[in-house]
Structure formats: C-alpha cells, structure tokens
Amino acid sequence: MKLLEKILVPIDVSSYSKAQINATIKMASAYRSEVILLSVIPDEELKDNIKSLVKKTVADSLNKIKKTLSVEKITVKNPIIVFGKPIDCIIQIANKEHVNLILIGGANVNKKGDKYKLGIIAEQLVRMSDVPMWVIKPDEKISFSNILCPVDFSEPSKRALYNAILLTRNFQSTLNILSVYEPITGLSKKISSHIEEENTKRLKAAKSKMTSFLKNFDLKGVNYNIVFKSGVVHEKILSAIKKLGINLLVMGTNGRSGLSRFFMGSVTGKVIREMPCSFITTQTHDIIQLKLSLDIKEIETHFKNGNELVKNGFYKEAINQFMVCLQINQMHIPSMYKLAEINKIIGDEHKSAYYENMAKDILARLWDIKIEAEIRKLYHVE
Image 1 (spheres, helix red, strand yellow):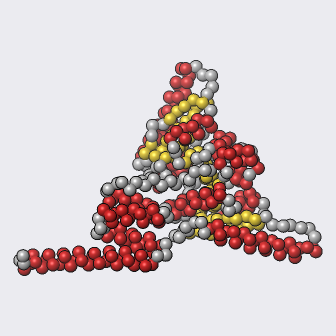
Image 2 (cartoon, helix red, strand yellow):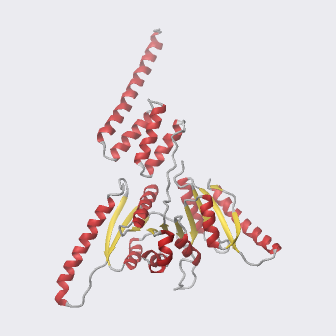
Image 3 (cartoon, helix red, strand yellow):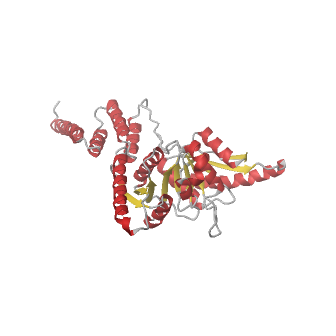
C-alpha cells in the first residue's frame, strides 16, 4: 500500500535547484513513492541532429538525478524527455501517469524585487492543473516542521486542511490553522466604540465558524495552533509566514474552472506569487489517496498497512486492516494490541479494554501451555 503512489518531478536541467531534489527525496522516502523525472524541451524549429544533441545532454543530466535518487533507495522510472510546450506536456503526462503530486521548482530569482518570484511555468501549472502542486523555493532548506494552512471555511480550504493534517502527522510537524477576517475601520472618534464592538463580534463569529469547521476533521495526535488575524487576507497570510517561521504553506484553490479566470485577483494567487516559502496547492484531488485491497492473504502485509494508516491518522481504515489480520489468525496478539491502541485514541475505552484483555488472556494461556509442556518434559509425563 502506498498513500502517495507517484510524484511527477518536471526538471529544467539549466536551472533546477538542490532544494527540488532534496524535497523529492524527503517526500518519496516518507511515502515510498515512485518518482517520474520529466524534462520538456521547447518545441522550436531545430534540425534533427541538433535535437538529438540537446536530448542527449538533457538525458545525461536526468540520469545523474536518477542516480542520486536511487542511492536514497527511491524507485525512479526511466526519465521522460519530450519536445513541446512545457505546460501542456506536464499536464498531459501527469494525467497519463495518474500522479498524486507535481513537484516543481520556483524561479531562481537573482534580481531584487523581481516581479516573477514564482516563475511563469509554475504559476501557469498552479492555475491549470487539477493535480496537487508543490512548488519549491529554490534557496530554501527543505523542512516540514512548521506548516501553515489558511482557511476561509470553503470547500477548497477544507481539502487543503485535510491534506495539511496528513502531512503534519507524517512528518510530526506543527500545524498552524489561520483565519483572517476583515475589520471595520473608521476615522471618526464618535463611532470608534461602535467599530470596536462590531470587530469583537466579527472575531467571535470567526471563532464560532472555526469551531464548526474543525468538527469535520480528526485532529487527534496533531500538534496544532489556531490563529486569528484581522486585516487584508493575503497581507496577513504573508505576515504570518514571516512571524511564525513557516517553511511550508498549504492552500486550496478552486481548480481549473474557477481559478483560471480569477487567479490574479485571488488570495491564493496574491500569496504564492510572492513565493514566501515552499507551498502546496490542492485543486480537485487529494495528495494522499487510499488504495486498499482486502484480497491480500499475507497477515504481515495487512499489519504493515495498518501501522502506516495509524501513522497518517486513518484510524477507521487501520481498524479494518487489523481486523483482517484477526480473520486470518484469531490469535494474532500484535493486532489485538493495535486495536486497543486505536480505540483508545478515538475515545472508545470499552473496545480498547476488550482487545487489551483479549491479548493478555491469550498470552496467559500460551504461557500456561509452555509451562505445562516444560513440566511434562522434565518429569517425563505423557
């Protein structure tokens, strides 16, 4: 079972960063993902001999990257090299290969105040791809220790938070859930008290919405903070990234249909174009997707799957895996203890005690059988 099966890594061999490769290693190692390296060569009118030379140069670079990843015990497909328009080719191959994530580097910005900190290709991919995007800040040390997920209680932010929670669990990070509400401002001192009262109501309303919103998520075992800010949304998000020392931002978008028209004016667009840190955008798909088979008969496989599901917070699915273990072997004590552990986490003390006592009872019986066998052997009792 792989929770994140395939990662597509588009490489510009002339400008890719170590950060992009390090992020690929970290993510693929954590989820045992297969990596697909891709390089798209702009479709220009080149002679065949020039095309062959360019393709060979690119292939040499990609094979070096493949070797680096293979040393880290990461499964890497043979690199893909195509001629064409980068955006179209990346999206086509992502769909063809059914990847879970596209991991691309942001622009290498040398000039201070450069307008395109994100990079034109990365920006267009965020706008057009339905597959989740992870854009790596080139000069940044790869870390997932401090994650920020801004929410506006919409469906896109719900998807973003779901994925942020899974990443937080897996990498044992701190998750900061941010809500920004717009305050009322006024210049007249006569109405200042009324403005203050109204802003207090807005904060209270934001907290109430957050409480209701978080009921949709399982945050057990997650180290998280809830942060409320008042002001212009994208400005407060950028400010929070700086003040909280955020190294990974997770934001939702409306997917291809909604974002393509309004991208430049959207909150997500305004934030990510500044490239404040590495970020993930979730469109219409989740990064983590469960593909479980109950037809597997090997108890070790189901037990391993169950452990991985627990680590990522899929408690219901993990229970199913451990129950399959008990169907295969009714005396599988490790599964009993795992079921006791999970039920304790989800608050079912009765079931937790039931499975723990079951395991202890079997251990006691096995011990008694062992002692009896030793006595029979010692005294030659038939």
